[in-house]
Length: 209
Image (cartoon, rainbow, N blue to C red; front, side, top):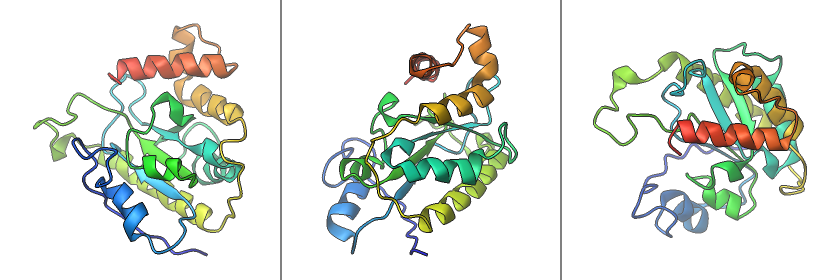
């Protein structure tokens, strides 16, 4: 229903990060030829999550940017929990990690977005980040999920409100399905937003964020 542009942005790292010459900012401000319906951004999706038992998890933020994206996630990849396609998807608010990648300009301009990432790992920005360490099966599953998300976003009107609804029920459902064992060890019930925030803080600490 809508055109899909595949963009490989460069200049995402310092000293260009969040400056006018950052590739995604330059694209949005100077090169886009019309309104952007939505953006699906991937960064650091080639590896396993470096936490035992969570290797197949992929995190998704930005669902709060439009209520329609919650339906996208539920229809495209969450469906029946736990995983059915080789990857477990965990949704969370973007404010837990911040604008750490190319979704920044889209969030700034109130364009609905989803940001997919597996977080940092020990080989981040190191010479040891070599092809044999990549998780090819997981990448294939992420690509399949991304295609379903893209098709769903393309056919769906996104009218807002911008960040105007509570994603906690879906966030809790995905966390319980993917992180339930870890939550049990922490004696964390995953019943409300406070529990989500405590879990998010723990995960970021373990991944060095």
